[in-house]
Image (cartoon, rainbow, N blue to C red; front, side, top):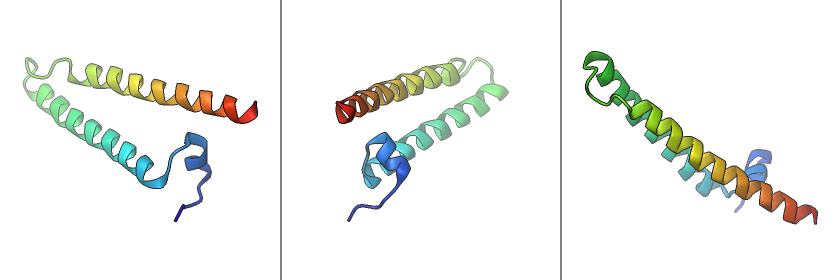
Length: 77
């Protein structure tokens, strides 16, 4: 069974694949927010956690966006 979704079509993913990706990002953001909370109380701990995760997430999303752009180009050819 395939759930219809404009967003899923746009990102070229199936429901469970998209759910996994979204939950992975959510988990990473949660862990990073806890580290940042600890950093607020103890500045010497996790001093680069937020910027490192932001860079990692940016990289992951950039790769996904490139793949989606390539798929869109193939569909229009």
